[in-house]
Amino acid sequence: MALWTLFGLKHGMATTRWPSADGSDGQDGVLGMPRYRPELCRSDCTACADSCPTQAITMRGPDDAPNGEGTIHVDYGRCVVCQLCTEACPTGAMEASPDWAFGVTERDDLVWRKNAPSLPAQTEKPQFRRSLHIRHVDAGSCNGCESELQALNNPYYNLHRLGIFFTASPRFADLLLVTGPVTNAMLEPLRTTYEAMPSPKFVMAVGTCAVSGGIARDGYACQAGLEGILPVDLYLPGCPPNPAAIIEALLMFLNRMPQKVVGGRMRHG
Image (tube, rainbow, N blue to C red):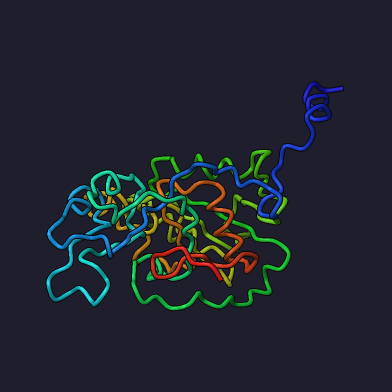
């Protein structure tokens, strides 16, 4: 009998039951997107905006701050979760949180708004009742997102149990998963991959670089992520988003989990 067979018999199943209620997502203690509390924000303070390396936080002009919105503009689609704003903020207006599951279907839902709409209704996708096949394209990533993607197929998360598979050919893919800020060298290969996919086809931006360009935005060698390049159906910021966040976003796309974020805030219901 093989050594790994004996090991498995001794230790039992390694795969988590999550997202069932009696399973662990494996992210205990992991920090997520900073929470913005505008009621604590001082109008004369620029500490969080000054510390942000990607301009996810910018100051509002005197005529650009609707009532109750605060003095800063927060775009989680540009946040790399570095926590520098929470360290720099003297009042706690930017505070650390465990909100790491930030998948959304609309880019605007990554921008903080006081009067955010209700959570979006799920739309039926009957073609994905059985399985989903994904083609991944690394469009200039630092490989941080790739490390998290590789973890999806380890024994703990075992993505295949959920009916979600990666495929080597765009001809068999339903969803194009893109990481990286889209370097100029990868622009045409990315478009060619998308064009090779059969219809209906969908696109997922994984990581802040793919969502908005991240730390490389406005650089000489890359684009601002997928903005203006491909139609994006699913956004997941993070640097990098963890495996559980990727799974949650995929299950949300499949209508098997609800979207939790609207107006830049984690909501329930």
